[in-house]
Image (cartoon, rainbow, N blue to C red):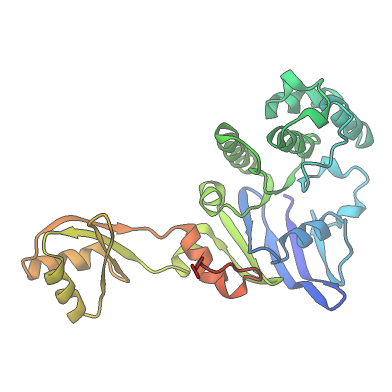
Length: 307
């Protein structure tokens, strides 16, 4: 079983501490989402894990060893950090053949992964003619080339069309089901919620959360009830008496934060308030993420205001 172990990891660039004492473990058999605002330290952490930068202190071990200790790293760790990394004048097939030769990977794997990522029909074209989505698929093919136990992907959905997004979602799940260790950095909360079993969340270089997706959402968001009634003012007054607030939406529905549908339904029945619709609303990953990270966002925009 191969895991990624980040141990008291710190990286400083001059006076800037990009990564600040990180400790977490990414285990096999599940997809771990790696989240955080811009400037949180995600990309720096991935670069440190792959030996592309040296830590100020601490370390990252993959399968109990630093990445640089592997003579043929693609056989253990597959990574996509930059879809533009392939030389534009090479064909996709030649790009993968070079990587295979450097890591003593059988050349037959090249055609296997080209087929797997959907590039077999265009494998003879030069990479510079590829769209961003095609380059992304090529980067994923390179990550899978050595049939690695560990896969690190930075924004793998970037540039993919809807079919491609569904494909990468299923690929990540399949890798985890096969017992591999999968770490995926992403800014797309709703998409991450469809494939991530576990989450590691950073803010300003520090660890903010390390929990299952379900537990993370539950811990960082309040329950909410959706309700529709013909007498919202009566329901609002009844809820106010027990400390709840009814908030009206434009579509005629209302919401009650911090309550359950059973509680609202029982109160409405006791007050003889007619209810046309009632249900618990599960908070989204995006809701929970924003609740946790707002204070740690380095680059925050402000609402547009006319002058």
